[in-house]
Length: 254
Image (cartoon, rainbow, N blue to C red; front, side):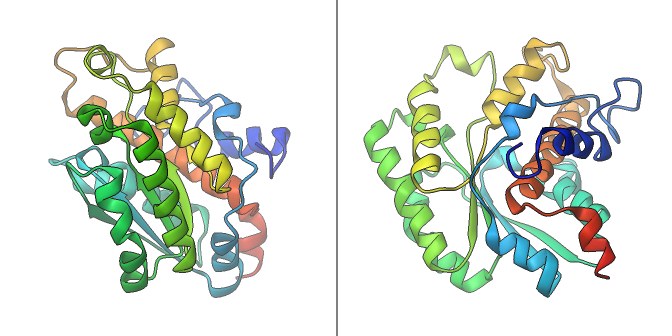
């Protein structure tokens, strides 16, 4: 991780429960992400100010069905992220809300992001996108342009942004080609200086290392809970890294 340094990054991952394979999977999973997947040079300056000054952090997830677990709403990654951040930053009011935009392309969503931020006033927007564009085989250049327009709209409205890319699934990968959309999101994130949460690479890593069996024909609710829990912990680590904020220093200010 760039902002906190490699040794501090390792300590952070251990502190949020990403280090011990012997502990219970749901509460403290063993799904340690490779540190390079959480490294970023982009800064979340608004998040840093909120944690240290206003002590109120409102996060808006703009997502689709993969941002929810229908039978366990509070256990999806936005709900888990809220719980983890509240635990990590006692004394800071943390709220994570979700704006569901299912079956919408990046073009469909980008045009309304500025208005959405103006109405909801989040400090941070996590924009989960790309899957429906890949399913629809949207032109990658059109997708890339929409991403840039959406990021600019969010920034102009006064919020920080994290881009989140597609889910990884060894089954759906045989039916759609995610590569152009993954590449576009990496390029746009760099061009617009926003962190990219590489959900696709994280899930593929966990599948390949045997952490999860994402090829299972009957994955069940337990697998969904574990995946969302691991994603939330990795996402929290990215937020802390990009905000360049030491949770211990925030606690001292209480």
